[in-house]
Length: 383
Image 1 (cartoon, helix red, strand yellow):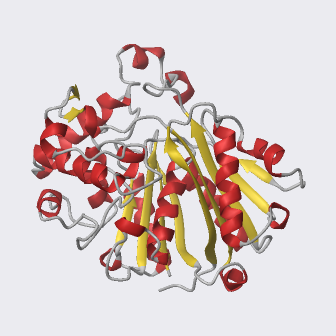
Image 2 (cartoon, rainbow, N blue to C red):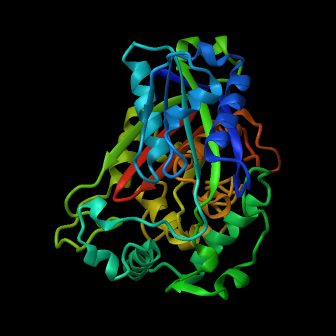
C-alpha cells in the first residue's frame, strides 16, 4: 500500500432533499461550517478552496458567508463529476507542496423535474434534443438493456438494487428518501423507460457537503481519527466508449472512464479491489450500480445478480455498496454527490455511521462518481 499524502480531517453535510426557503449557497455554507468544526479550525485557517455547483451559483460566492479572507477559491464545473473533480484538484494542490490545508465543497438546489440540458453545449445538434435523447432516462434504459442482454442480468436485480438503496436511506438522517420500499412496489411502479420504473431512478435534489483535507503528516493536528486518501483519480472518455449523450455507437469498443479511473485509483493506492470493505458507487439509476460494480473491478461482469440476490452488497454483506442509500435515496444535487460519497466513507471508517455502520471494523473504502458526458472520479481511502 502506498504512503498516504492526503488526509480528510473534517467533514460536514447539509441534509439532502428539499429545504424550502434555504438557498443552495446557504446549504454549502452550512456544510463548510460543520466541516470546520469537525476539524477544530476556523475559516481563516484555510489556505485554499475548490468548490462546485450546477444551479445554485458560483461556489466562490461562499466567501460572502464565511469570510472575505482573500483565499484562493476556484470554481469547478464538471457535471455529476463536479465533486470528484474538485477533490482531485484539491489533492493535487496539496501534493504540489504549495498548500497544507484546504476545503472542498459542493452544493446545489435543483428545481423539481428532469435536468434541462442544451445539446449545443455538448457539441450536439438541436436534433439530439428534439428526438428526446437529452432526457437521460432514455439513454440509461438503453444502456442497461444492452448490458442485461450481454451479461444475463435478471430484471429483478434492478428492483433489488433500488430496494437496498431505500432500506439504507431509511437509516440515514441526511437522506431525502427515508421510506423503505419492497421489491414488488418498485417493480410494479410506473414504467419510465423500459426496463426502469419510477423508483429505479434518482431525482434532482438539494444539499451540500464539505471536506477539510490536509497533508497526511499534519493530520493529527486536527483530528485523532484521520482518514487517508490513498488515491484520487479522474478520467474522461475515449473513442469507442458508450457514454451519456453519445449520438452514435462506435464499432470499436474501448474501456469507459469508470474502468480507467478505478484501475488508476487502485494502482496508485497499492490496493487490490478485493481488499475493499465498502464502496459508494454512482447509482443514477439502479442499472448504473449494477454496471459500475463490474466496471470498477469490484466483481466480474455477469456476477451481479447472484451477488445481490445473496445479500453480498447489503450493509452486513461481504461488499456493502451505497451504505447511505446512494443517489437513489439521497437524490442528486450535482455539486455535492461525489463529496457525499467521501463523507459516508469517512463516517464508516471512523465507526460513526450509527445504525448503518458496516460491521467488522472496515479499513478500506472506495468511491466512484460518474458524470455526463463521460467522466469518472474514484478514490481509495483507509484509516
